[in-house]
Amino acid sequence: MSTTAYITTPIYYVNDRPHIGHAYTTTICDVWARGSRLMGRDVFFLTGTDEHGSKVEKSAAARGVTPQQLADENAAEFQRVLATFALTNSDFIRTTQPRHEQQVQAMLTRLVDSGSVYLGTFEGWYDEGQEEYHTETRARELEYKSPISGKPLIRATEQNYYFKLSAFAERLAKHFADHPTFVRPNERANEVLGRLRDGLQDVPITRTNFTWGIAMPGAPGHVVYVWIDALLNYITALGLGTATGSDGDRARYWPADYHVVGKEILWFHAVIWPALLMALELPLPKCVYAHSFWIANGQKMSKSLGNFVDLPTIEGFTQQYGLDAWRWYMATQGPIAAADSDFNAKHFHEIYTYDLVNTVGNCPSRIGAMIAKYFEGKLPPDSDEASHGGWPAICEASVREWEQCIASFDLHGAARTGMDLLRKLDAFINDTEPFKLAKDPANTARLGSILNQCAQTVRVAGVLLEPFMPQKMEELARAFGGVAAIGTQWTARAKYGSIAVGHPIDKLALYPRVERAVVV
Ligand code: MSP
Image (cartoon, rainbow, N blue to C red; front, side, top):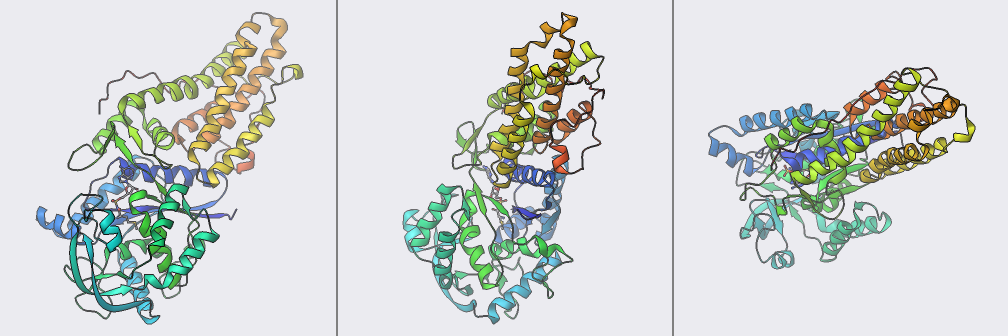
């Protein structure tokens, strides 16, 4: 595994306000970034806003502001969200920034010079809402309606610059064959492959019917199609489109480990983007990971239904249950695989109670309380071999499994390793019954050994859960051995037995019970 790591979210449209979809993608990327950093990787985590295009132009006009004003306002809102959610992005790219615009122009010039972009006439089925053209076959499949808005597709003709996507069909097919995990999950890869078999048409990459975009170099009146502009953000943020091909030493992060996207924008990322990179002679990302959708109370979320879980609703949850509980729910119950996930307040409450109150809160709390009661709050020695529960090996196996899960973006699996450790520990406590042993002083060595093993294991579980609930797990680390180790080498942090005998162990109550009040 290379030591550098690069993960990206889609860049979000500024004509929309942040909602659960944006919060979800960004949060799972953050969990991965934190987990990879824990393992000692040098992580670059990028997010940002997609600010050009006719939709932004129209929304701004409707509100009587300039597109730039609208973009500034909403980009600030997205940035505020990142701060509120303690997301650890390394940079925030905005497509109206000069650094991005200049590199996009430079790369388009290169594409024209190399013959991958040419001027021609285009006719096709256009989805106005998505700013996307469909082939005849696809349009027929869609019954000539937008799969997103349901509005009719429009027959449109334009003189435009095209990207020679068709020229890359074979190379793309070969790439998919050679890299079976290029698109994940597998169900999504199969969909892309199915569409690839229909053949590829060249893509118009400039527009002349509006002006809010990056000017196409050498072609007055043409602005760069918003999707081409947007996809390039993944490399302009690293400076790969500058004359020197890097911005400081950020070039080292390319190619990306994961482009995490929602399934509705997979085609752009799985087909158009790799072809563009091939045309630019740059390496392809390792994986495009397309998650599914949150739905709300069994219904698709849509603007027309007005049922988007929006920022004020999210803040209702974080205020009542805490930010880490929100992150936990997002990262463990979300639509990371092929199926959609239903968001509902009752389920949220159940997960909070079952996972967080009853396990993550309760297990360390009972261990801390017993150490306080029987050993004056100091870690007793593990001196009674007869009471060994095999915890060093169990922890070691959990850590190895967790590492694999993080590396492969199996966040549900990674969360499970930490949670399972705590559940096993609860079972160990129930089996060995330290509270009963404590009644007879003759059992002190045995009691101490059991509690020592419990505390050492809790500490390891806390490390594995840290990317999911960073604030609470810092509290846990503080109580179980101190935070001094945070920031030290992964091997030391994840090692069983890092709390010294005699070290104070504090009592703590991480997750209080909550009365259910939030209604979505
Ligand atoms: N601007 C484009 C992306 C360009 S990337 C080069 C765009 N932006 S968006 O604001 O519409 O954000 C789309 C992203 O939001 C999706 O890819 C997905 O990450 C997230 N979601 C939007 N609705 C969602 C759900 N209901 N559920 C989960 N995530 C979804 O598309």
